[in-house]
Image (cartoon, rainbow, N blue to C red; front, side):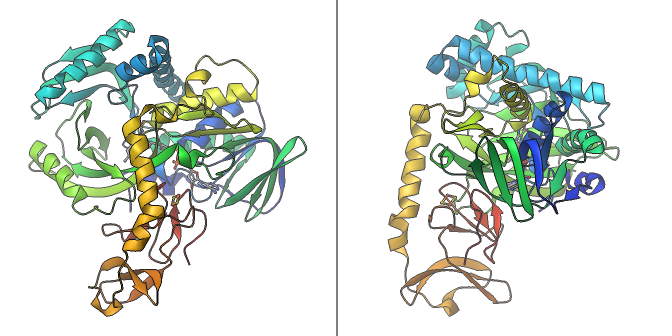
Length: 495
Ligand SMILES: Cc1cc2nc3c(=O)[nH]c(=O)nc-3n(C[C@H](O)[C@H](O)[C@H](O)COP(=O)(O)OP(=O)(O)OC[C@H]3O[C@@H](n4cnc5c(N)ncnc54)[C@H](O)[C@@H]3O)c2cc1C
Ligand code: FES
């Protein structure tokens, strides 16, 4: 699967292969926008560090983002104010607005060419019954004295809305050009990025940590886990407080037509819109139609997005389709800070709830300050060791229920069936000789079988008929038809 930014990775990537053991001050594991932004902050403070990346720098979630750089994280401020107080909501808003300014300052200072564009962001509803939700959000934002917000009842694109909230002075960019440019700034001086290195363990030894990889060890005083879903389960227990959610994106070439502003709706299914300029053409990105990763109902996910794109631009041409998943926390706040009370110098940044462009910058500043033992006024809001798990009752119930179904109940529902009876291009779990087996038959009838239990914590997998993958409904690991891991937290292949 390729995103619109994919070619930029090929043009810009040229990092080290690890062939020795390394001793340094900080080891950052993961080379997406989070790991690289943290690296850039450490570089500015003259701290020694290395970045260890399993595949290609910027090749995973960051490469598939729609990359709106905004503090408008859907509807969130009224909920935060009600649950945790006005100061908390203000802190979340200030942290993300500061991130937009920081990103702009970095781009200006380093002269980064990443198509950064200041533009307004809108959340709208097409349901009369949801107008009050937007009004309450607007009231809270006004009470927080946020000057850049307004409540309006129409938007400048061909979608009829009942109400919308506009945030002025937000932005968008090319996430791959931005991240790779940051990486190249410190790599050109420090030679400290290693690609295609799989970290498989972190262990404490006296006052240091040893990171074990398939190509050598890294000994460091501080470790930062920026692997999207944390690669370590215990302590930390992030698998109990996060799940993954998949979004789809279609890219449409709309030629010389213009599309200004960034849009998202409040209701479900989610639709998200923004445009970019590429080779003198405007490309519209229509994203959304989300579902929890592991939901077997993946058919037709792109068609609703394409229908909307053609409604807006009947002469447009679809030039790309992709999907990927992001980590969702139960209280809607990312986990940034100490990984666990029991691992003092290990830090984590995860659970960006599909808003990681700004919150990765928030993470970079908080984690850098924690390493330097400096106070950070936003650290408390995002504290990763907090216990606020069940404030979102609906999500918590759904997550627990899903785990019980996938770990226990669904295992007893599998029926005996002959492989011959499975149609071509179909995947299914069937019972063969009293054993459950995941079977995929390709278009030519060739059969691929896997053990259908996730190698993370043994949930029963589901077959994703759109991408031809085995997906885990519990925490979102994904495997190809041969059983290779394509998405963590699982790290071992399926038998
Ligand atoms: C469809 C979609 C649209 C989005 N749109 C927006 C948007 O408009 N605005 C916004 O703010 N956010 C958006 N997001 C969210 C945003 O893209 C993510 O939050 C962000 O990219 C996460 O970055 P990351 O660096 O944490 O993860 P990643 O980019 O996934 O980086 C993690 C890296 O860690 C590496 N890794 C994993 N395991 C290991 C290991 N064992 N050893 C070494 N390395 C390892 C991986 O290979 C990977 O490169 C969107 C997300 C999706 C899915
Ligand atoms: S991802 Fe945790 S059990 Fe599958």
